[in-house]
Amino acid sequence: MTTTANGSGTGPDVRIRPGTEDDLEELTGIYNHYVVGTPVTFDVEPLTVEQRRPWLLAHPPSGPHRLLVAERRGRLLGYATSSAFRPKPAYATSVETSVYLAPEHVGRGVGSLLYASLFEVLHGEDVHAALAGIALPNEASRRLHERFGFRPVGVHEQVGRKFGRFWDVAWFQRFLPPAAPGRGA
Image 1 (cartoon, rainbow, N blue to C red):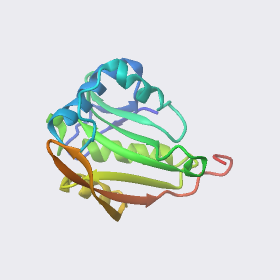
Image 2 (image 1 turned 180 degrees about the horizontal axis):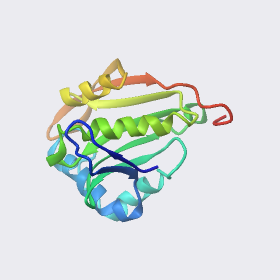
Image 3 (image 1 turned 120 degrees about the vertical axis):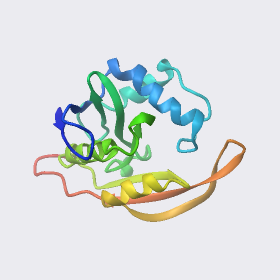
Image 4 (image 1 turned 45 degrees about the horizontal axis):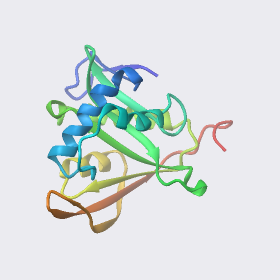
């Protein structure tokens, strides 16, 4: 899957494609920005490229667990993932989704472009529910998820400690259309 987009300030030269090993260094850099400067992820120390490799390998180019990147002129603008929600078999049709953007591309429509592409590829998979955990406060992430049909389903209070304080996590959920006939379980 490779698409070129021209929407919401992203420009005609933004390409959405599966993430690959060649992207791992830039993906790690984008993620580490959020690790060291924000509470949006509960990792507390920056990760090395080698530490991040198993995460990359858990997102193959097909199936319910995807990694899509947005790039322009060979530079990554951000990425979106659908990952295993929990390891027990009955959770197999649920995924946890997330979007991380290079800080200079926040608010330019890249997150929406990535999520639109992610849900397009998930349409053909055996995925029933998408969930997203959002560390609070994060109004931009809340708006993005609601724009894509997520609804709030609860808040886990004070479940993460980072930067010397406790953070709440709001959970959002949406259901996906059934897998196409002949696909999935």
